[in-house]
Amino acid sequence: AQRVTQPEKLLSVFKGAPVELKCNYSYSGSPELFWYVQYSRQRLQLLLRHISRESIKGFTADLNKGETSFHLKKPFAQEEDSAMYYCALSGRGSTLGRLYFGRGTQLTVWP
Amino acid sequence: EAGVAQSPRYKIIEKRQSVAFWCNPISGHATLYWYQQILGQGPKLLIQFQNNGVVDDSQLPKDRFSAERLKGVDSTLKIQPAKLEDSAVYLCASSLTRTENTEAFFGQGTRLTVV
Image (cartoon, rainbow over all chains, first blue to last red; front, side, top):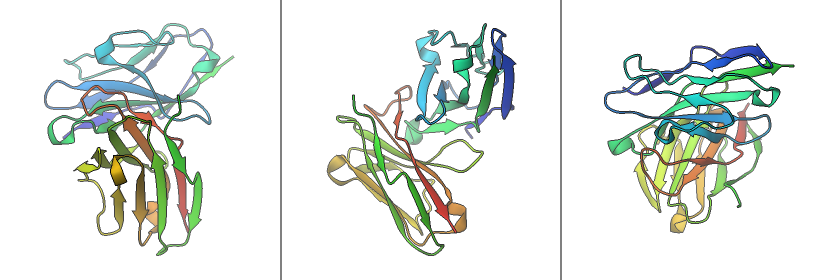
């Protein structure tokens, strides 16, 4: 069964510090993984997807199939990075297009 | 570009009452989703439409929840009768196509409180 686990409900760092938001998944097959972000009073939006292999707002995420992880990283956190971050996995076959979300990690970046 | 529109933003009802939510997706998006987000959890898919047909409603509690997408554009989600455990944010999303790596665009959500 598809499952996404985000072990940290809350994460706090100081501005300029590195940040890593953890995401582990269970899936039989080749997964498509995403990070979605929700800033305060804004709607949920895509931050990045692993297939694009790009850096968005300084964030990167590498798919590690051996460890079944897709951790989100940024070398120098900024105050504007404070938000709720959700890791998600896309279904295939009959569940194509469905996103399976983790419970989210609330990131707070202190000045 | 106009985003996904949802209404109402907030709704408070008593248990056993009925409620309906409305969603207008981004123009041209064939796929529409309804997600339920209970406090402290990630969104969970209730139903997915491709144009005006249902392609995935396996997680929809069909004894009380129903949804339709008339003419393949707007959609409504109804709960009748509501239970206390239905208190959640209901998110509508749309995407251009139905693939494994397509981007979903979300609305602001409707926060439902059942008392």
